[in-house]
Length: 278
Image 1 (cartoon, rainbow, N blue to C red):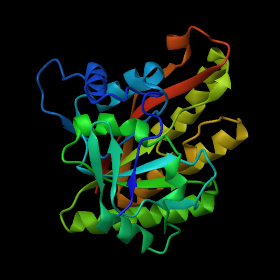
Image 2 (image 1 turned 90 degrees about the vertical axis):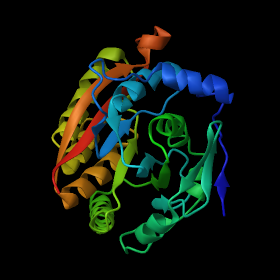
Image 3 (image 1 turned 180 degrees about the vertical axis):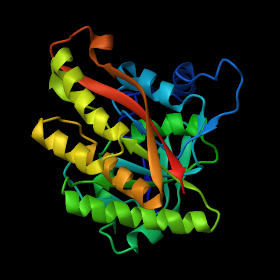
């Protein structure tokens, strides 16, 4: 069975297990009032180097509980592999240990007839799931994942695949097996801070409205370089198939906070997803 090894350890995040665990934990916090974690169905998290985006990841995951099995949707930065590439089995290694791939769920997804295909090639050099796994390992245990790399922004294809994903998750829920979704996405890239705030706000309005068509339309019309717009749209299509999704904006930042350079930044945002009806 295939095992994916880290490709950006010691670049985007510490490669030493102890240093990594301490770094992740430093960005996570418990609710001040001692409340039990709040169950959520899904999240959108950024995937840059921790110096830039770990604060947003930590804020988004703190005080909530995700399902133990997660479909993790990421963009395809490399151009390799299938349009909807599913890592089929085995595991993903991080410095904190191995994350098991939920083989049965991966097979159900690739067998659903909605564009998903077994594919390790789209994931081999793609960093945008790897960066999130240490945070998920520290907050969700035992953790199983189905990594999906999304390599198209075609609305019809994303609707078809997203609705198929929703049907698979509905079937699993009917068997008493809860599955959540994690979307890996940064926001607008390489414009100045003020322009990035404006563009990111337009995309986030559509995300909070749970409007996948609107998100893809505004990203195209306004030239918003949100790398995970397609995975986010797929998640929202899936959520609509399951019921009535509700999105909560958690926070936003740009790389200027860490770098001090406001002339050419990347935006980062955190969003939580819940289902109002199921």
